[in-house]
Length: 224
Image 1 (spheres, one colour):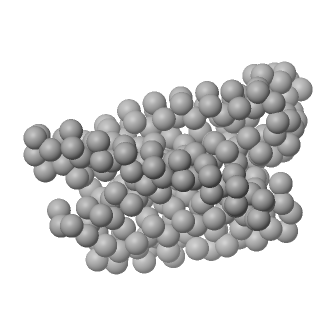
Image 2: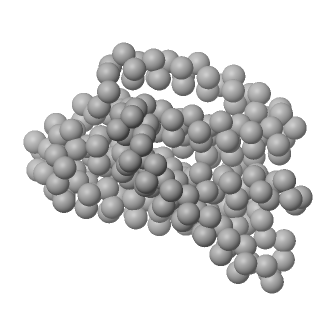
């Protein structure tokens, strides 16, 4: 693998790490509209995030061994980005779940239903990048260390940027759309890089209409 492609993968895992923490922060605001800004909300998001990370690491490693191709990783990231756009549209489930399950389990169930798919898919990127970037057994430790280091740096930066700048300036819905667009855009660049543009063109044709439609509906519906 050449240096450009290796650099792309490191940036990709940085973005996915940042997006995971961004979803955790923004998720407290999404479900907080019903459950408030309580310890229960943070506990629910932390629980769901950690469960999804465990699932994503497991399935990401298995998929990476089965299909060790960068285009598959980019496709997973693109789907994760698109699924983020559905989060604001799931807000009607919050109130019924709180009534049926109570505050604690309602918050956990809400977080799981709304954020399980994007969080799990994003977590798959780490082991996938390690698999694609490792050329020999002797380099596994160095590669995995670099991957998790840049992913963690992205997470730290994301918490600060989302909490202190994006949410106060743009609001929750727009911040979710920004995260989605960043993931889809970087995945499209990766498909162009690894497939000479063929898969990237197909992805754009498939996702641009629904992305624009969902984004417009979220804007019309107003900010969270």
